[in-house]
Length: 261
Ligand code: MG
Image (cartoon, rainbow, N blue to C red; front, side, top):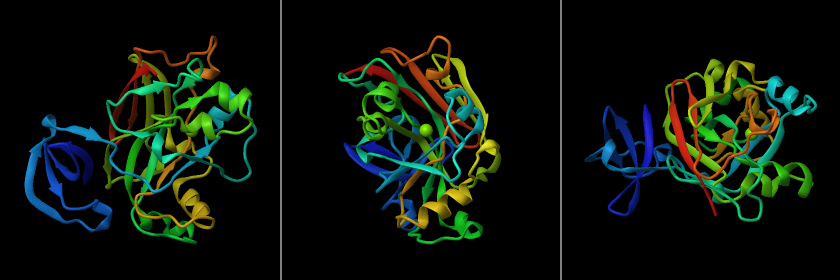
């Protein structure tokens, strides 16, 4: 099933998508599926980020091809960082180049896990049982802050608008071998598969749950394949007027324009 969040009459609602319509829900779907008898046309609403996560965890250096292009070291265990929840935006909402760091903003197309129920110390073999579904994410990153200016990643990964999500959550999906593609102004920049993750979704959920309580709606960005802008010759960074598209097989395409602050 597909679930979205959308705005109708100035109010944010959750819904279940059936063909070209949205069945309105009473509450977030991971709190129990309670449908109203109201429905709206998908084309007539503005989609929002499909979840308002209590936490956003992200994994760095989880594809060997991206480690190679970044001249990074293969991690022995998952490299975890946290993105601010205030960075989350929905489909078609603009990625804003921050006034204080506008020059080296980069895209990272990723598969994102949405947790469905509270979890702590989950074994890898049980880890997919706590998943609600999957969506597309763009782990937008200010490379100058990440590499030279800050010495750690908090600001680089968490400026407002640096976590586009959507367009919806797909619940009927195996995450093991999905194509991930990122296009910039229509040109293919990343073309990878989740089969190449160093630490797979089961392992990541289990590993995170040994440190943190995973609450319903928690988001886990699982890392990006090769093809990011900073690794290109010459580097390609986002500019006002650009359009970025992240497509994950079986989910859909997350599209966002780029603007200056
Ligand atoms: Mg990333």
